[in-house]
Length: 152
Image (cartoon, rainbow, N blue to C red):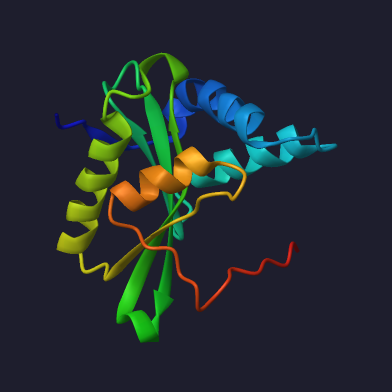
């Protein structure tokens, strides 16, 4: 199976917003004051063409089944441009059909063709299924480093 990927734009906001809301409801264990407005503002910046990240819609153009958020970076030790899958969401009704795996494989192939030398994917310790998914796709958990975050 091969799924289609396309870069989301501002006109796709009505398609993306319900999926973003569902993703956050599944991933966040508690409500955060003002988080919805902050996420919506971030989505708008992204869809307007933020250069450091891209949102890909997965599936049919008029009725996507999910999305992937990709952030780009640069790492000399990795050999150059890197990409991180920060979010991968597939609608609950169609999960388990291989669309997420196909989307990641399609993305990895495309990014490699554009000179990206490493693809990272985040998986929460609280989501063991996500870790299994990542390992099945060839992602290795690094034991020599730990991602540390400072919220600004």
